[in-house]
View 1 (spheres, rainbow, N blue to C red):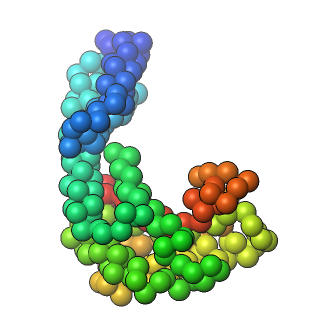
View 2 (view 1 turned 30 degrees about the vertical axis):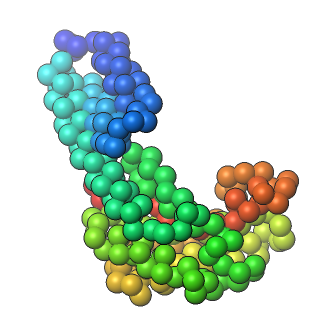
Length: 214
């Protein structure tokens, strides 16, 4: 019989989860803190499910906190380095605590209906490549997106070709192609409404998603 009830274990899990997800806006290491909290919650749940007593839960909690904190810390450092290197204010970087999402808006990356990266934006992607070489213990997804104008089949092909164009620059700058997966999502994942031009401009983008290796 388990010495540590599931109800008690779930209470610990909830406490860690709420703590990890609390707004930490004034700390430069917010994702280190949140990563440790989320990792602890995950470890606690694993210990609760797989273990037999309170000791298993606490071991899982501690191990998860260490792993989550390490991942969060690595992302914090990589994000800071990337922000310091980029010069375009239009490039958007979002740190979720488990991955970095770098968004390249279509308007500054490509001409209309073109898959060729603008010459004046290529140095910016080269800086992203430099960062990826410095932080080589990551995997990279390069994903193209479009708005809903035009045939869906055309948009799918355009988004994929744009993702490949960005990937080509990254690999030509020395990023191991084995780390990168490149594909298009067409119009299927909008981040804004396609009912007006502003929303459409937000949906036309290439995302570079950077994840630390386990």
